Each structure stands twice: as C-alpha cells, then as structure tokens.
Length: 214
Image (cartoon, rainbow, N blue to C red; front, side, top):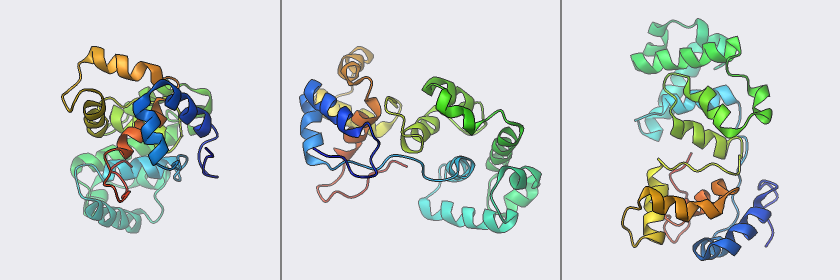
C-alpha cells in the first residue's frame, strides 16, 4: 500500500496499524483510497469561513463570504477588526456572526490565537484556544485540527456522521454506550483522525462522492 503524494507522512503507518488492529477498518482501508489532509489556506480566513457558514447552505455561505470580501477588501484580522458591526451585517452576516468574526479578528490581532505556537502545542491546548472564540465550538476546532493541521489523533465523538458509522459497523445500527465507544475506539490511538476519516468514507454512496466533512 502506498500513500498519495500529498497524503500526510504518517498515513501509511497509520493505515497499516489500524488494519492490523480492527477488521472493520481493514476492510474500509482496502476499499477507499488515501485522502489529502493538510493546510487549506490561511488560518484566520478558514475559521472565519466556518463561522460565516454556520447553519446556512454552502451556496448562501459563499454569497455572504463574497459580500464580506467586498466590504473589507481583504479578509484579514486587522480589516475585520476595524469594520463596524453594521458594515458586517450589511454584507449579510447576522448580528451574532458579525460579533463572532470580530472577536476572532481581535484574538488573532492581539496574539491570544498564535498560529506560530501551534506546532509546539498539543491538540487539547489548541482546541481550548479556539473554543475561547465566540462562535467556535469543539466540533469546529476538531475539524480544523483534522483537515487543516492534519493532526493524526483527533476523535470528534460529537460528530453525527461518526456516531452513525460507529453504530452501523459496531452495534448493528444501534447507538453505542459510552463504554462501548471507548472499547471500539481505544485501539485506534494514536491514529484516531485516520480511523475517523475512514468511518466517514463508509457512509458515502458507492460512487465515491465527497462526504459532508469540511
């Protein structure tokens, strides 16, 4: 088995270890190609987009984002921070989302979110830093760690897709107890992000269409 040229460096080791310890994952790994995890661009813009896109369709989120770009010209901490809430609302943001993106901008500007420190920080420390921002919950922070920072051992148990996949594969489509969840996922450490990705893939149509993850 070989990894895609752009797959994380740990992908082959992770899939081999997971296949060896879990027959369900062994089958899924055999049937799904490796995936690209890693930076998807500027940290501030990625997190701001996550806030903008909450509870609205992808199309609506893109429309609001385009109007936000027109409003501040360049979506950067200093430009968003100095924009008035009224201006952000005119771009299509709700009152709360306008406040949330300004809070995010202020934290980047003042350094309480320090991207340069993240390589030296563990996952929980980064999650704590991100969830201190209004409008960013643990799920969003975990998605950022998986898809943007390519952290290998994140287990987003609140994710509905992961819950569904776990119930299908390990409990005959019935919800799993916390004890059972621990029993199933404990052997996945330290590759729980990779195992989660294959759980998500297992819910996709046979055609291989993209799943609902960021």
